[in-house]
Image (cartoon, rainbow, N blue to C red):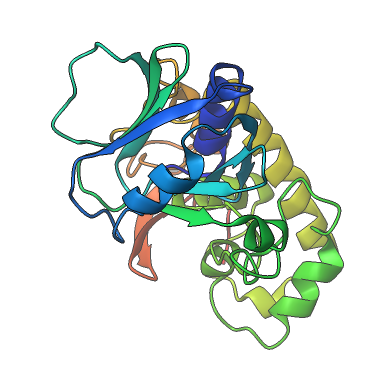
Length: 277
């Protein structure tokens, strides 16, 4: 599943192609994604409107028009977005297409159809942090992401710290790949209880989270499964993985074989030498 860096890369790639462009038509495959696509509502509301901003919140792409209507897109497991000429052949899994006034199309392709598209009218869009994103935690780069924030939520939480970091109600956008990498960099075992971490642990996690996500964004995201960025180029942060997907391989720091366990149903990788329990 695309995580924060992948969605941010897509956002940055699409922004110059979409900003100040007019949506002239919207086409759908007729198949539902995770939820039914609001095709009729998008045609009624978005057609003829100018796109003003393209932003990211957590793992969602937000496209706002001139009247503050907001289209929210989640890529699910295998979704990707790209810009194509209107004349380009439509692929089997191109489920939503937004035609622009310059003859190009924004296309959402999703093989497994776990992605989703929502449409928020202006009044809901303006209050999205209390509505659609009301249960979403702060951005990792935001001022609200502090050791005090983590310590408050982690009180009495005996769940593994890896699961805690992946909880979108705690912090936005950190998925399985980057939770593994962050905890390795911090030298914290993924099974350690969240409530056992102290302020300096959380400060280290925050600092390293920002560093790792920044590097991943600069590298164009991680090429895992079907991720392709908006320009059609694969990312390459995966060459920098220290533990993810490296079961049995030697740790770059201490040489211990990387181990793999299941935590919360997700594959979890760690170094037994650098991340002592």
